[in-house]
Length: 177
Image (cartoon, rainbow, N blue to C red; front, side):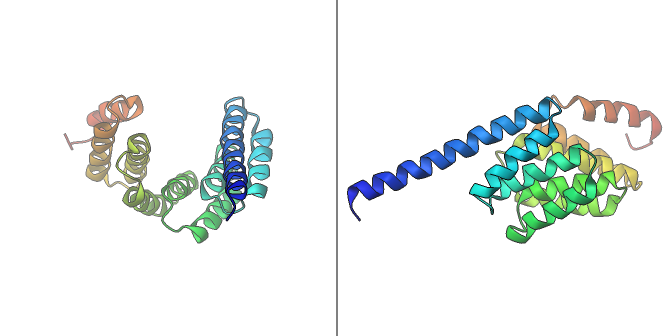
């Protein structure tokens, strides 16, 4: 392959990656500003460039979670899992959706599955998953497992204040400690 063609392809891939990164940052900014429609528009444009980008798809679906549109979020997350059944972020978000809908056993299953696929260096994601797993376990009266999940969360993120509050609060309500 001619050298100029290789250089052109490399530059094109770099431009696409830069567009993706810039788009993700812009969408994140919109979410933080509660401009959800603008964030969804950015993700939809990114998905036109790369329709099977599971990270973009999952983050796009998460906006629907934030808006409380759980059916739409669930449908979009299921599309992600069709492409990559082991994608931990989609599994985590789907756990959140099930928890929000009161489907705690399904949420527990999603969180436990997500934990199998997060890489060990994704400590904050793992901590958040254990936090939410603990909350879902608590809802179905699996108290000891919930406490263990929260303790494990603190191993990954010792600064997790909500988990510390849960452990303090529920220590008074339970004979587990």
